[in-house]
Length: 139
Image (cartoon, rainbow, N blue to C red; front, side, top):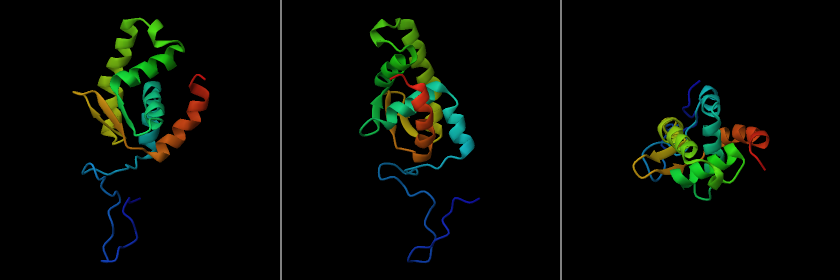
């Protein structure tokens, strides 16, 4: 099945399947396959990242902000009560594995040098993530 739109614009040309985002040359909203969606959601820390980022007002966050929230969700306690080595393991797994995987899927932009994250939104991914959130996230 092609992602190309069957409709034509006024010039008779088919518009691209993914309109460019104003801030970058890549598609503004990617359309991952269901295999990609379920692959991304198969890891709890990626789900936590999606939960957190989809709830930020502008989709922007820092790695340290994300780490604090993931620590709180994983331990169901105050991040201050968590040993530093556990926090560093969470940070390393997000930094080296989970955020790059989300970036490769065009779900986020992740600048590893500045540790800044920008989530562009992905409605289908969010829909499936929400089904899990009700059972997975502590209240």
